[in-house]
Amino acid sequence: MSAAVEVEELGETCEICLGDMAKSDLINLPCKECNYNFCISCLIALLTSSKDDFEMASDGNMHVKVHLNCPNCRADISGTIEDTIKLRQKAIAEDLQTVADSDLSAKQLQQKYWKEDDGVKLQQKSSEDSGPEPLEIDPSLFGGLEFAMSDEEQKFVTKLMTSGCPGQLCQASQILAGTADMLRQGRVPAMQIAPSGSGDSARNGAPSSMRHGYSNAGLRTNRSHEEHDTAVTNFQRQMERKAREKLRRPLPARMPLCVSLGTGEFEQMALLARQRADPDREPDEPKSWWRCLIGRGTGVRGATMTFVDDEWDGTVADAFSRARIGVAAGDRANPRVQQRVGPKNPVEQIAVKKIISIGEREQRQRGLEPSQRCHRVLVGAVRGQAGKSGIMKGDVVTHVNGEVFTGTADELNSFLVNSFEQQGGDGTVTIVVNAEVCTAEALRLRSKIR
Image (tube, rainbow, N blue to C red; front, side, top):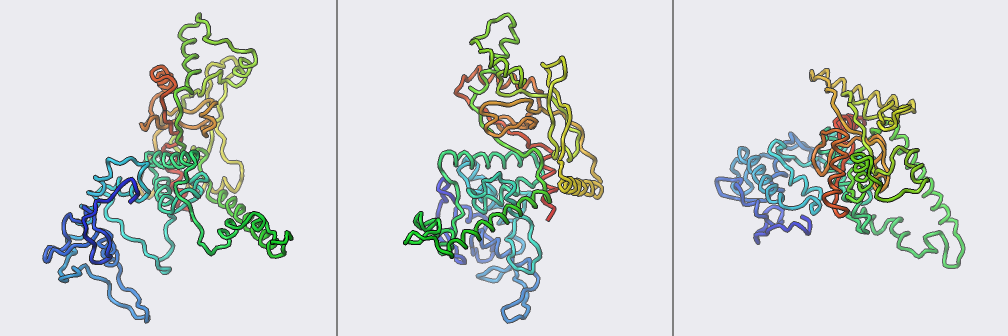
């Protein structure tokens, strides 16, 4: 557990793994005959071993699988072990409900949001003969933040991103936003530290002259020059591999993003709303002619963001296209979606069709009905801190302050204006974009391509 969540130790240790017993390990003893008890980790390990049929010993002989017997009295515990694990997982989840998500690790977040329907998660086998393992970590989903995330955190975020659920997509974007915020504050949440004997760590710890390939005599050695060329070659190969992977398994055009904005960003939107409500009112502050010219040219006219009503057509293909928003001639006050643009690379187009075909095949096999058309709100224009934070024109606003947003563009604009009117510049509004059904389904189908 992390430093923010202390385990209530009982002064007892598990007689199998010799680890500390937690308060939840006293719930529902697995053996009713001798009241022998051991920790939840050992319970899961025993249950996992019992699922194997036959295993090969070191001498090459096959031996029978492990039976669910009490380690102390050999009584049968097959009827109680799963119930014991579930009750203890439920107790752990209840204890973590009062702790903020930002103070929990990825493993603790999985424990906090465990539900009885999830059942018991068995340990993964490490045997090479067990076949290809499911894709647990997909670095392309982290937006370049994988270096600041532990393996457990990467697995958890990958699971959320590929779940096919918009709510879990929103949760993943919040985790990535928290990681990025910690980096901006100069704190690195987790570091992938290389072994002490590796060349990279030794090179980083060496003096500047040695890192750049110079000897103590000030001369560049052939060996260091060759190492530098090898490093450049490896970097080029890595970038080429990423480019090929991007074409083979393209990401949706709109990836989920969580942004926290100060209410002071909506001051210009509030001023504009007052002018529309009272056209005869003089502006609060005069604008120079070039600021007015820029406002007319971009269509933003001083507002941090403008919004446009749109309708989703119910297809997964929409996730791989971006909406182009503009104004019609003679109607500059009402921007609208003019067209949607998909990928232009032929290889990427083929990969997108493959992803869509997987979803269509699943629908036919399960007899599912196509998704219904529904209303949504797009970002029509963006500037200021919202644009610097990554929100782009054409993004879909899906969550506001942690709640699903289902209103119209005018309602969203009014909400942001009211946030400034009530809180001034001291409040904060959290906006999540692109955590929608089509993006979630596109990422889930994309994860099936190996």
